[in-house]
Figure 1 (tube, rainbow, N blue to C red):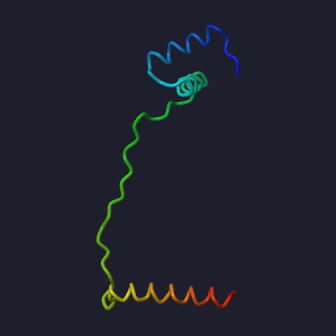
Figure 2: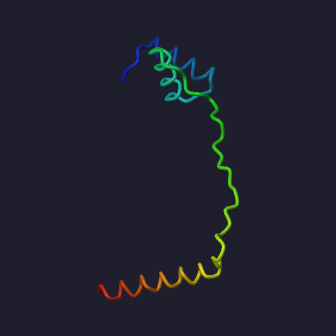
Figure 3: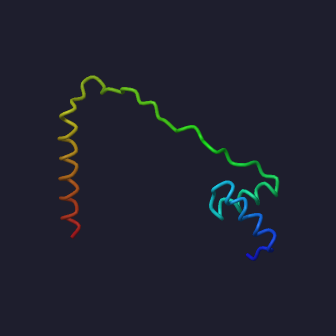
Length: 83
C-alpha cells in the first residue's frame, strides 16, 4: 500500500502522539474512518471460580493411581501385540 505524503505525515504524527506502532495507528485510523466502534482498551480479566468437588463416597483416591497404572500397562501390552 502506498500512502499520499499528507496521509503519511498525519499517520506519523498520530503514532508519535499516541505512542503506538504503525500497524496499530493505521488500523485505528481505518476503523474510525469507516465508522466502526473502537475495541475496548481493557477487557475485564477472565477468571474461573474453582470450587471443591470432592470424590463420590466409596471412591478411594489411592485406587485412581492403580487404575492409571493398569491402563498404561494395558496400552503397552496392546502396542506390543500390534507389532
